[in-house]
Length: 475
Image (tube, rainbow, N blue to C red; front, side, top):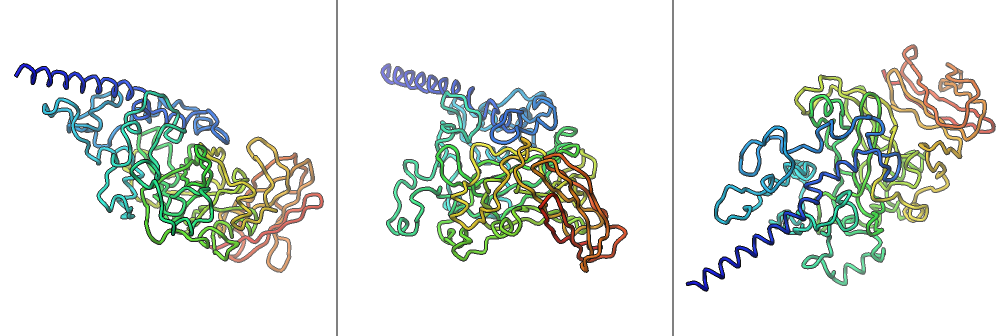
C-alpha cells in the first residue's frame, strides 16, 4: 500500500510539474499576450503602411481589443468574468470547477469558436470541411504548443514557428498517392490549401466608430466564394489569404495576410483553368486587371445598398498597393445599435488610405505571367511612398453612379492636366480640372445631378498622355 501511495504521489508531482511548465509557456503564448492583435493594429510596418493605428491615432489599450472575451461574458465554468477582465487564463477555455481530476478539465470546442469568430462564421454559413465532417476537433490538429505556447514569444500566429500545424505534419498527410503527383505540376510551390480550400472569408468593412464608442464589432456582412492567393512568408509557398477592411472618421485601411478557413474539400479541388487565364480559364480578377490595370475587388451599389465582389481566385498582383481596389463604406446609425444585418450604410471612398500585406507578399512578375496577367500594365511600385512612375487615369468609382462619382489619376512629373467629361457623341459637358499638377496621385469628384441618365466619357490629357473611360449615370 505504501508503494502505491508513493507512486500516486510521484505521479501527482509529475503532473503538477508538467502543469507548471505548461503554465509558464502559456504566459508567453499568443493566447495570453494577445500580441497578434497588437501587431495587426500597431504603427509598426509589416509590409505597406503600418497598422490602423497610423490613421486612428488611438492606442490599442484604449479600445478594448486586448481585453476582449466571449460575448456572453461567461468563462468555461459558466461564471461571469470579473470587471475589468483580468486577462486570459486556463478557465477561459477549460472548466476548472471539477475536483476530479484536479487539472483543468476537458475543452469544449465552442470555447474556441467564441474567440475565433471567423471559424464560427464558416460553420454558421454551412460551408463544409472534410475534417469536421469526419468528426475532428480543433485539438486533433493543433498541438499543445499551438494553443499553450512553446516558451517563445511571437508577434503573430503567422510568424514562422508560432504555429506548427500543417497538412504534412506527422500523422496527417505525410505522403500522397502517386496519382496526386501526376496532377500537380507545381513541384511543391503551392500549399495544399490553394487547391483544396473552398473559400476565403472576410467580414467586410469594420465600422471602427462602433468599436471605439461602444466596443461593438460591426461589419457590413461576411463575404465568401473568393480565394485570395499570395506568397506565404514562412515557407515561400502560394497560399490562400484573407483581409480586414476598416473605416474610421473617413479614413480607410486594409490589412491582408495568409489566412486559412476550415473549408477543405477532398474532391472537386481546383484545376488549372480555375487559376490560369492563359490556359482558357475565365478568371474574374485577372480579366478585370487586364482590362485597365485595376483590380476592383468590391463595389458598393448605392441604389440598393448592396455589395458585389469578385468571385473565384483573386491573385494579388505585384502592384497591389496601387491597383487592388475596394469600396469603403460607413454605418450611418448609432454606434451603440445592436450588430446585425442592415442597409444603413453609405459610400466613403474607393481606395485605401493605408494598406499593409503582412507575413507574405504579392505575386511576382514571373508568377503573374504564369497565370495570364498582362504584366505590361504593372507600373507603380508604391503610391504610399509617393513614387509614381507612370501616367494613369483610373476607372471612376462607383460606376454606375448617382449623382456623384470619384475619378482618380496620377502623374509622374509636374505637368499640365486636363480632365473633361463628354457625352456619347463627343460633345464636351464640363471640364473638371485644367491646371498644372505636381507628381502624385489625385482624386476629383464629378456631380452628374444636372444630367440625364446615360453613358458618358471622361478623358485625361497630360503632356503626350491621353486616356479615356466610360462612366454610367443611372438615376
